[in-house]
Length: 302
Ligand SMILES: Nc1ncnc2c1ncn2[C@@H]1O[C@H](COP(=O)(O)OP(=O)(O)OP(=O)(O)O)[C@@H](O)[C@H]1O
Picture 1 (spheres, helix red, strand yellow):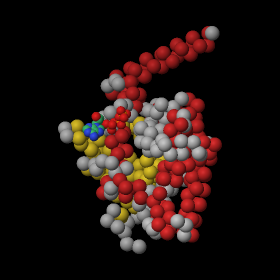
Picture 2 (picture 1 turned 90 degrees about the vertical axis):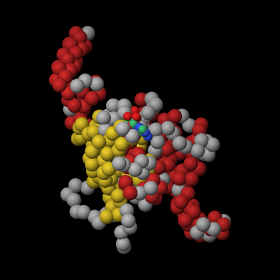
Picture 3 (picture 1 turned 45 degrees about the vertical axis):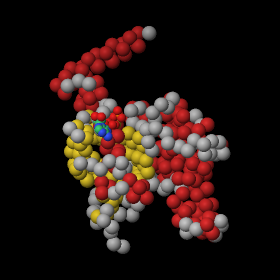
Picture 4 (picture 1 turned 90 degrees about the horizontal axis):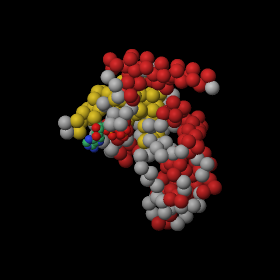
């Protein structure tokens, strides 16, 4: 099959990145929000993008999902079957439709008046319309449409079960508690059959119990569907618990990249989060160790 304008030939690689961000820069007027950023997300893994406020996480996300066109750089996504897409050249709807990248937003964007199940069926609208042949007869019950419609309901039920929402299938989405609405958004994204799922602060505003339910859902997505995940998250308990790989940004540049344990102990990351200069890091770490030791001693004497 001929490759389209947005595709390139496949390379053979020893590792298997689903996403490669290379020398990405994004300028807003005089502000360099992202400055020569490169990182990879491996297939089948959960990659977290973290960093202090204003570090550029959302900007990277918006470049990957086609909401922004980067000033410079390349963003390559390679599907399981080997086809590659240059995302920076594609419109957001093409990234969703052709590259199979799904996303959620910082603010919940459900159809709150529709039921939970209807929200999941609407997400599969394109698939259903295609099966109808875009005709009224198709919609009125030709076999292909009926088959696609039954399949859509099965897919919706599958994800409702995974998200522990099956009991609420017929309730208006707006009636769900906040944490359940977040899981419904993720279930809705999964109904489109993505290869790459981008989640913008999925744990924002969740209580600890809802955070645990979210962690469970994300782990099951990785394990059972093989979908790779990129997430922006401020909640470190979620990031450290579920991520395979963490990329840390500060002022639009990468300051650390590795396993959760690696970045957690990286002095540059500690400094960025505490807001101190690089040359003060050693001093701050010593102070932290002294405080931790004294707290340990106090804890032991009780
Ligand atoms: N559309 C825009 N126009 C102008 N400046 C922008 C735009 N989007 C982001 N910025 C600026 O780019 C920088 C990075 O912002 P971004 O939202 O990507 O950071 P972030 O790491 O996601 O922050 P937060 O954790 O607070 O959401 C900030 O200085 C922000 O003000």
